[in-house]
Amino acid sequence: MKQKSLLMGLTAVAVVSDAMLLPFYPQFFAARFGVHDPQHVGAYLAAMCLTVMLALPLWARVVRHMPLLQLLVFTQLAAGLLCLYCYWSSSLAGFWLLSLAMIACKGSYLLVYPQLMALAGKDEHTATVGLLSVIVHFGGIAGALLGGLALQHMDGGQVFLLMAAGDALQIGICLYLLWWQPLPAPQVANPALPPLVDDGERLSGVYRLGLLMLLFYFSAYLVRAFFALHWQAVSGIADSRLAAAVFALPALLALGGLWHNRRRARAGQEPLGSLPSMLLLGCAGLLLQALPDMLSLLAGRCLFGWALFQLTVQLDVQLFRLGTPASYAADYSKINFCQNLGVLAASYAAGLLVAGQGLATPFLVAAGGFVLTALAYPLLAARQRKLLAA
Image (cartoon, rainbow, N blue to C red):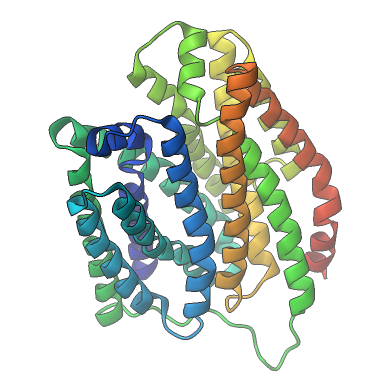
């Protein structure tokens, strides 16, 4: 469907735009405002995460009363204008205020995800989630590469002009869809039939899944911040480009996982491996990455990347199986809050662990988190299985 492809493209543009400065905020704050304190950068990244956590439920409420594409036209226009203000801003406090407002507006594009799931049939959910996961993986890499190239030829502030151009492109896609390719109405249940899951049970399932997501995302993101330093220490190779390539291995495994899942879907089969087994596979990958051996680290990185993709898909699909198209946006905003809370906690914990115990410690703690998630899954997901089997 052309509409779904355009929405996927909109998501890709948004992810690339958001990732341009993400790896380079220490350099940006040092060059633009003379701030060299890493704690300041950490606080800013945490504030960005918190802003999205608080803004997304608000946008989920707004889309109950207006179409998503109309909302995105206004929010991305506001985000683009705020990008221009960030480019001109010379005050550190003003930059914080304007940029966080920009992040709040940009975050509305996350509701494209539940919109795509509402347009897709239940049998297409796994494939759609997998494709979006790959888009996020490669969009983040592409954005970081584009941001790095831009910083070689311009100052950090000018990257905000590229981000504003991304917002303008998103507005163009939204206007095209509104005027020439209107979206079909999402699939809805027959109102004459009783719902399979009542609201109370559905929300209970969403909150249980949210706790699993929080623990999973905390464990998965715990190993991101200092991975490049860990790789360089283990391999003895200081080349940052090679470190970036090893860091990106999970994206390649996600692409392989998408091909594998689609092949099994064409054969009428579910993705290979249950959620607990993928958690244990990911645990093995994390432990291998903690070893002071380059080949073990590479093997562990591949195992971890495969498990990470499959776990992300399986957990997200469970969310959309619990709800209905009418509830997808509200349910997703709750789950996204839990995901970002896990990422936020991981960002703080990683620094404390590395400072106190060394670069390998986050991998050991993350492996323990995966085991704990596997043990908690039967307790937290037992009710979901009963509801989905009803």
